[in-house]
Image (cartoon, one colour):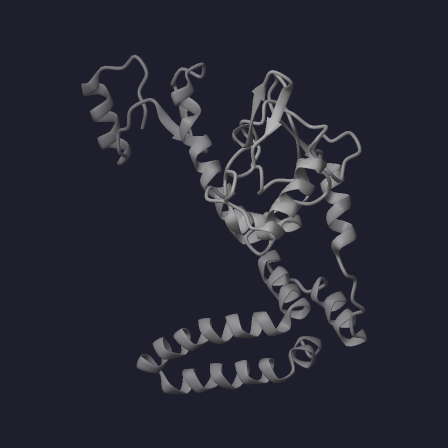
Length: 270
C-alpha cells in the first residue's frame, strides 16, 4: 500500500485492516522508479545497467563462436593522425594486415601493438617512416622492410582523427541491413531430411507452450548438440528421482532412451 498526502497513523490502520504491507515512493514498476525525477540520469541508470548485462549475455552466446573474428575482419581503418591505428594489427593499406603480409618483420617488432604515428617522424622533406633501428634486421628482413617502405611511400599521417570503415557497405558506414545481407551470404543452406520437415510441420501445430516448440525445433535442427545437452540435464534429474522413487527413475529413463534413439518417430507418434 502506498499513501499520498496521508498521515502515518491512517496508513498504518488501513494496512492493518486490509492485511497488506506499506511501501514508500519511489517504487519500481517494470524496473522504473515511479515517483522519481525522470530527468535525472540516476532514474534510468538501473534499466541501462540491466540491458547492458543482458546484451553481454547475448554477445557471449552469439558472438563468442567466431563472431568477433568475422566482425573485425570486415573493418578497415582510414589513416588520419595515426594515433589509434595499429601499424601491424589493422588493415589500413590494402586488404590485409601487415602482420600477415610481413610476418617475419612482425616477429622482430618489440611492440606488437605499436600505432602508425609511432613508426615514423616528420622531417624537413616531409614524413619519414622509421620501421626498425639501423642494423637491427638481417639482409633478407631489410629487403622486406624496403618493400614495405615502398608500399607506404605515398601514405603519411594527417592532422585529423583516424576513422573506421565497414567493408560490406559501399559507403563505409555500418548498417544493420548490410550486416544482415553479409551474414545471409555466409549461411550454407543444407537440405533437410523429409522426415525432419514433416516433424517440424507437426511440431508447430501442437498445442504446447512456445518454449517447448522452440526447444523441439532446436533439437531437430541440431540434434547431436541438443542430445548432449539433454543427457547432462536429465542425468542430474534422474539422480534426484532415484533418491525418492526408483520406478519413476526407470520410466523417465525408458522414455528418454526412446527419444535419443529416434526423436523423429517419437515426435511423429504424438
